[in-house]
Amino acid sequence: KAGVTQTPRYLIKTRGQQVTLSCSPISGHRSVSWYQQTPGQGLQFLFEYFSETQRNKGNFPGRFSGRQFSNSRSEMNVSTLELGDSALYLCASSSATGTASTDTQYFGPGTRLTVL
Amino acid sequence: AQKVTQAQTEISVVEKEDVTLDCVYETRDTTYYLFWYKQPPSGELVFLIRRNSFDEQNEISGRYSWNFQKSTSSFNFTITASQVVDSAVYFCALKAAGNKLTFGGGTRVLVKP
Picture 1 (tube, rainbow over the protein chains, first blue to last red):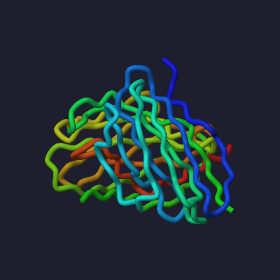
Picture 2: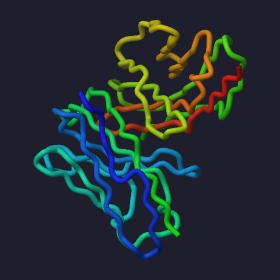
Picture 3: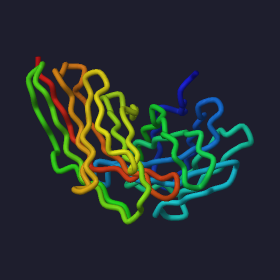
């Protein structure tokens, strides 16, 4: 099976712009989660989507949003970019079904976003 | 709330030495799952091992082994006979209620030839 894919791999934006990142999960996986990784804060959970619905949400401002399509592909959007949004954004998929998921999350290669 | 602590920020060893990575976790949930992931310089998080809270049996998989002790809330990971390709950042992670991973700060492992 193909792994989790993320596009683009690298992105440079300026403050105030918005950005959309894309994630295609492993075939058959219906849950997609997003994480932000920065040197200062480490790996932090953004949100999780399952069957086109946001099921869990981390502690991030409303500028961070996402959605999931019927084919389980997911996008996350960051509006009004700030310098502090520079990070590696990682997407993970799992075959999670119930809310108390027991499944392993498999990660994509990430999108490295630089905000100037 | 969940919390994962990896006290070691960096470990440097010479090839063929064993490396043990420490992980201590906190959770009030009685059912939870623990993971180790490896992050090479390319950035992708690679799943290594997983352990359920109700199974304290320790195992060995190739050069990897782990020691899970609920009594001390620890989930340590050992690489036996390290190789240069093992150089990476290793993350311990906890999943309790919900499909959300809480990560430790990571331990950078440098294996010198």
